[in-house]
Image (tube, rainbow, N blue to C red; front, side, top):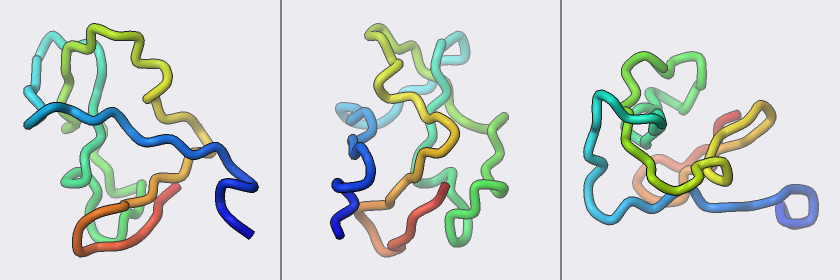
Length: 81
């Protein structure tokens, strides 16, 4: 069975270039660098996430309970709830 048969799949927001933190931003951004170890979500320091000024409606990119993140690039391959 394919994941797409049991779940909706979408990519996160693709920034053009580096994430530019904005202290007065309206959206916190979870980046690969924020996932420590094996991707255990309890190890994410939510207070340390960069905030950005997001001008579009960010709702389609927001994480929600039950979401699973798959790391699709890089040396570490894992998923985290």
